[in-house]
Length: 107
Image (cartoon, rainbow, N blue to C red; front, side):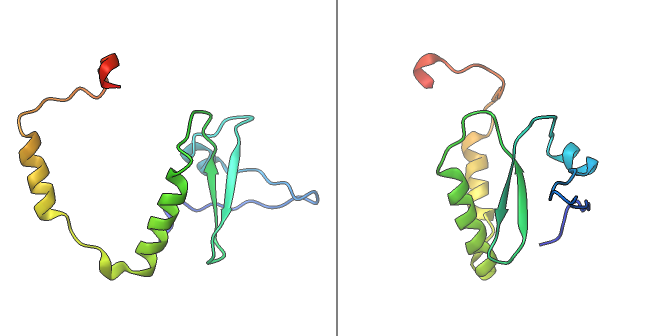
């Protein structure tokens, strides 16, 4: 996988480092924000901004499984051309306001 952004930092004698500015900006990190590190089987380390809001505990493991499956079996990927055209036909002419509040019975 190709890097979208690369940056380097140095460890201090106390094993501390400064998150480089381009990474802080990309992850929208501020002072006192929490970050999480994941060590992948390949040896790469991925850093995430820890969200202060509610997170679905099943989402991260599912996405990790999906990523592992795609990386291990890229030949299984198929375009969604037919299904996407059907989805477009189903919603054709429907206006959706993503900022509109849901009715209590729709939530």
